[in-house]
Image 1: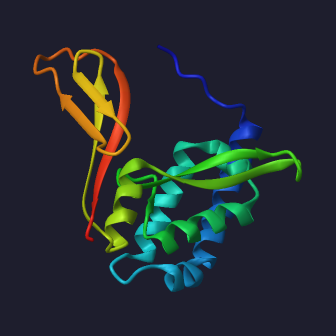
Image 2 (image 1 turned 180 degrees about the horizontal axis):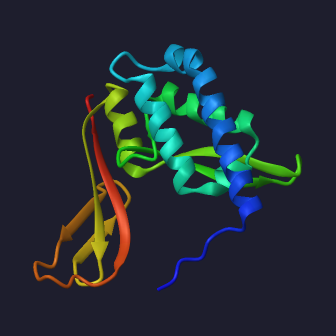
Length: 169
């Protein structure tokens, strides 16, 4: 299968944008350091942000201030952008401003991490429910979830997701 390549001017434009964003991320390192929890590294956050940008070139079209703001927001929350246990940098069209902005959207693992870090949760667990699983739930005074996964290889398509958290009190 032949690879399609960008026309030369567009490739050069992307290279310039990448260099500009990389420079902005480097210049924002002091703010990222101030926002980070002690157990996290600014170099890692900035490297993960750059990887997210390279994976999703639409982020290069976004307002750079919102991109840097999103990276700092990830740092404040203690979530790694684009990692398996963090958040995603997502470009959105801002109708009011007439431009693209970046928003942080935590994934479910990132949200679970935030719950654990709150120190109000003793346990939290999340699961997917597939077509062939046995799944029941009820609300009201005695809420209950019954989930028996289908133990064969083909469980079917994913139908639902759920999480169960136990508060410390």
